[in-house]
Length: 276
Ligand SMILES: Cc1cc2nc3c(=O)[nH]c(=O)nc-3n(C[C@H](O)[C@H](O)[C@H](O)COP(=O)(O)O)c2cc1C
Image (cartoon, rainbow, N blue to C red):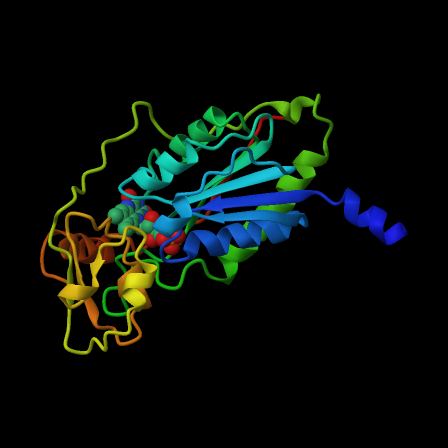
């Protein structure tokens, strides 16, 4: 009986994230562990089929929203999904993952969306993940989040839980301030740029088709990527067991080379909390 009561009183956390190369997911899971809360629901909206269902109302003690930074903003399809959610009065934590360049206006954009959903954003975090464009040959924040990043994520979760333990009428009932500008910056990478080549090493296993968040891999045309649909997330490149998907020479490969040269200095996660 005692055990049942303990379970009934445990607090729950909901995770909502878009994460084509899994760094956002990894950090959110570590934050959740740090809170010590039970995971109530996970809305992984990475694949197109998962974005077709919109829960009518999210309900738990805490919601963590997560997305990667794309050109200093949220990926449009993640922002569009998050905006449709409703979670009146629920404490929320917006979290962005960026590839050791800058997160610019993405965290503010996600925080603003939390407010539009009716949530109360009481903490926020910008963490670093291996850049989507990173490869072993052209590394950018390779293998991040690493142990140190995950320890920060866990500690962040612990601090959030402590903040939530304070009475709702106390000073922590405000909302968090984060870095970013309004109007948000305009993302510079347009659709339709030549991006991915498929080499002769392709064995037609179809993993690239399964992991693409926008169904841009054309099975019938040699598993080529449809440039006008592709969002450049690199999920297919990183998931290919034969390393048969590579970046074409062009503006995006040039960006990868430039980031490899300019983003070598390790950045640390930043966390923000509602004023006490
Ligand atoms: C199209 C695109 C644009 C990106 N823009 C930025 C950026 O502006 N700043 C940055 O530091 N990282 C940028 N990144 C890197 C991702 O934010 C980073 O790799 C993130 O960890 C990926 O998250 P995921 O593993 O959950 O997909 C970009 C990645 C892509 C695909």
